[in-house]
Image (cartoon, rainbow, N blue to C red):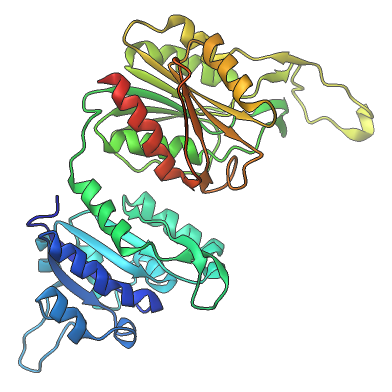
Length: 400
């Protein structure tokens, strides 16, 4: 898939720069042409001689490498490439990329690049977790860049945590998957629900849950990447959908999500119900903020919300598919199987809050898929982007 592809490899000042040698070797072995652009700090960790020998190209670091008037054109590089990969990407370089601080050849090349950009962060766990870094990474995602999430392990500080750059073989796989042109959902229309719902008590209070929407958004991006037209109905979240094939509909309450889902599902090939929809809402909503001094003790009477999954299952047409989610705390398999049957789903994705690293507000998930034939497939703990691939692989098979 990489034969003949022109790849810019950007290397920044991280101890993980030594892995760049393996990335170059792997890319070249698969037929790609690699042009290395390295920051001055990057040269402190790996020498241009090594990189040039592996890539068969002189390494570019400075705008002006000679005193004869010649210079390196970041514009030409940006037009030349089929993809740009920044690996490793330090917190400093990610910040510069996010805010357009063009003070070295790598950043100016990034800003001029017309091709897709892949970013593989590498840094200590506290730097990676810092809100500034996370905001910058989300900013790059919002620009349409692809973030290759770092793994967990021992870092240069000898601490254990997330921030270790993804291994070269996996980085190369990400590029291969992108260029493979896997379009098994081409011309398919898919509805996805994501995030929580908020059920108002009064103008400032609500009943909600801890859903971040990360799993639903990962599913939307995966479907769109594989050629589908995605309608993403999302409750209140801070996430951004980056793919142009995603039409986003923002809702707040379960009723609003129900109305949007039931109106859009009939025109789709499949629905994936990933949202954490509130089962109940307050029967009465106060038009004014409830004052403790005035009301004292209060009682909330809750009434059931519309069951979105059951409603879509009831109107599902022949050939349409419907996928549900079950987040359970006890009796996981039994409850998931009951939900699968009761709501006329084609398969259900089960996760348990008993599993460490699964559930709400984390970047990982551990799921089990159960289908109509009660075939049970368990998956190990993975990043939610990888979990999305497993879930959509199953859907693509059913739709084909």
